[in-house]
Length: 278
Length: 269
Image (cartoon, rainbow over all chains, first blue to last red; front, side, top):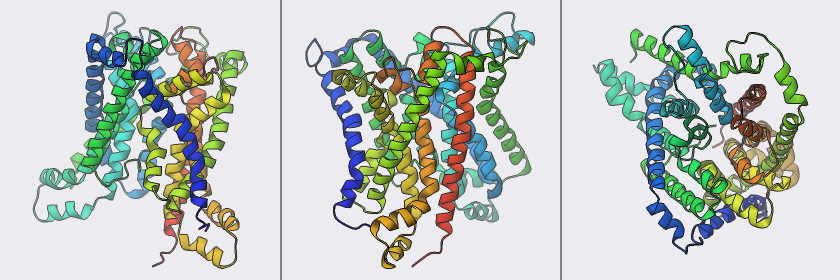
């Protein structure tokens, strides 16, 4: 192999250059703009504190991320168990069924929900046809719609992460517990579940981090009454033309994400978290 | 551990999850083949008119073509930049290679809207909005991480003694690289390239902030969704789904096959 001193920096140089200009400089610009508003250095931060909208949107985003995470774990865990219990030859096909929707663009998947849940959508048509509803019900622009959309997008992440952990752990330990007289329920609660805890934590944090930055799904399915931080940033830039507020908001989102990543690294120190997702 | 009842219960649960994950996508096909202007289900009459519109209406076919062009350029750049970086990280263990790996996967963790906003503000100052090269490089930042992750995983599994053997037998560094390392990694590079292609082809958020009047296919769909529901969107969505399932299916297959092949080579030491 090439072992000369200069070759490694040379190989890394294009990436460093690309990321410096298109990733690091934009960050510095966000920082700069958030502290250089027309109203002084602290204008952006002051807006964060005083605007009633920011607090509501921030809490709404956290609450949404949290509930989506919990739903994904509760729904995904048994599904991951099912895949992990199959013989290895069959797992590939089952995983493919999870990967198919996972690969589809988020915009397309969100769009299909708007077709299903809309006023003249498939769900309303079916409900009326079945006689379960007299007229069209409102599903769009409700928390239900946002949750359905986001869970459908993030559930594969939960399942793939959990299957990764479940297939790696030592099945012999569960068998040992059974041989030593534990009931199936006891073996599950005291042996299997604790062994999958790293996977649960990793999946939870991954989904939480990804949910925090969601833009498309809340915008299309939640409408103006269920905005997230990402939607508010977009609104500040494209409607209000207020870059200082947008940048300040972006810093809040970034800080929240970094905090979540730090907690994740602290809880699961030595795992390649992206090993199973894509 | 599992009784019969538990197993049946889990199977039913899994079936429901699959239905939930796939069911919205199942409506796309019939919707895109609906002859009527209004999105009705099930369609009364079938027609290919929305596909015709997608490929002939300049605003749609132009967007499709632009997306293709951008994604191809992004793929070429990401594969080159990402593979080089993976080599630096895994083979040469440069000082701070852990740091370099962290930097290269950071765009996967940082919310897209934050990256998009930062780029928008920089591009606005430099007058880069509406520039195709700037859009391509912006997409490359979110596409490169996939190449780095996939290729460096394969490199870690590739036995270094094979490369050393080639060197001992008289191959030059470049010969070793392109006759030994690259063929061994070919399918992982292909997989990374596919992921990079779709990171660009499916991107909406960065494009929404930096592309100005350049309209890619996702942006065309987005602009349409906010105005009226044109069934051409369903046809465009169907094309995107078919493309990503085929492309990423190939990528995943290639990646797994490559890792398996590298792992089954005999152990040394």
